[in-house]
Image (cartoon, rainbow, N blue to C red; front, side, top):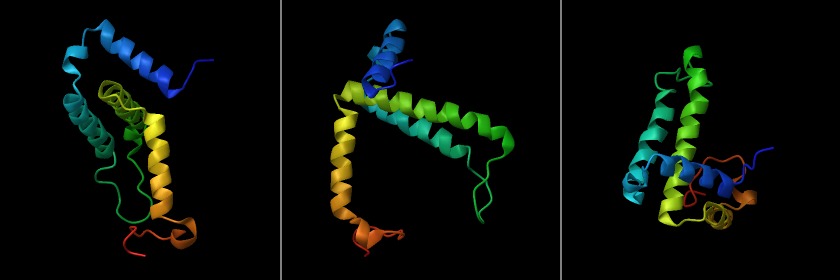
Length: 117
């Protein structure tokens, strides 16, 4: 069974780039831009979907969702690696901040920003 930890996935992404001598292009700035591009390619799959009710994809687009999501993850892991960010630690810190900003007993079922409730 493969190791799906963030560290293992990051090592795979790093090895992939190293085998191609791409690290020279992978500054945090360039990777942040690439991450934005990849996230927008994922978003583009949902462009022009129906505005009422659920947002069904055109059936031909469905297989592309996983590919684009994987591109986003690959760019994020690469960015975090090059920027010296421990994603697991950053996520836990962010969740603790969000718990303070959005107490469950005050925001459950509400789509409000922290300064709107």
